[in-house]
Image 1: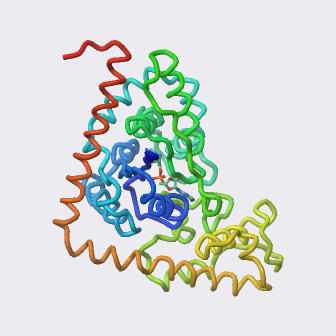
Image 2: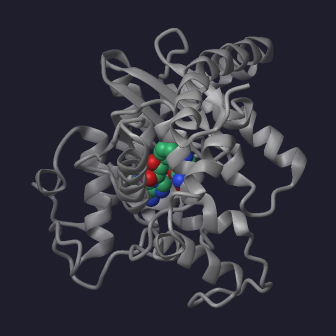
Image 3: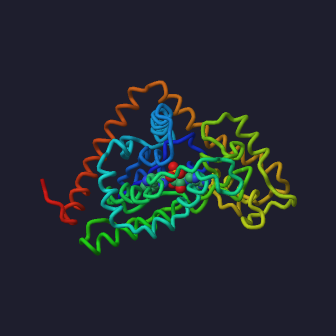
Length: 337
Ligand code: TYM
């Protein structure tokens, strides 16, 4: 059976981009694969986190994974730091990846620029860029390779990290023998890159400077409707899917298409006005998210059940991760205990 692995950072509220680009695909794919999904708390600390908030966000993210339809009886749900083999393999991969490869990562360049207050339009000061932010892709490669994952369902922004993971796996295998499965990225055809509603040139993001442009999956319906009503479009009035010329309208069409199971171009059919496109998109999103919020409320009422699921997931994940790590260490020439 196909092995699948993916992760999400437990920082801030899960948004529509995370859901359409990743979580929804995870839920769809869980039944015909042996799937592992985690809250990547070790990635979250590449930027400074408040300890109490990190703890709460990690629990909240785990509850969210179940709320979007992931069934802990069907797939393995775990917290990354509960499986310490990830960090050990990460070191071996840091010694496999090159400085030049890490330097080319656009997410590092963007995040470092933002942290240093150099990004265009950024008003954040400070110059702290952690070494972990730089070596992050080696840890991400470890997350994937340690489960022998064949397929990694992610949004479009993770494409480059996946390419690097494949390169690192191939290099390791050519140096030390066939230890790792070389994984494929699985990027959805619609919803892979949900853009900020206020700034449709940038992707929707948890750290967005524009909260009005980001739709959280648990926001109340009035707020969601308001955000779509105020979404930035353009000065024309034609509803047409054309991401270069009409990024705002095209983003709405992508979201509407993703929420209603159509391509963005098909979703455009029949619209003459931006107003109805916005209100219909809001309605479709609200309807799609409603059952998720209902499930989350159920889970929030039973924290013991969530803890049990998290503990069981860690055991299942560690059993697989331990085997792969032992294989990699042996191939590299570490002396067995
Ligand atoms: P993260 O936490 O930023 O995002 C989680 C998932 O959501 C997708 N995503 C989006 N998809 C569409 N439109 C958007 N605007 C949007 N924003 C986010 C991301 O592509 C991702 O799939 N490095 C990863 C976490 C990670 C990981 C891994 C993923 C760590 N280890 C191993 C896969 C496999 C990250 O920061 O995702």
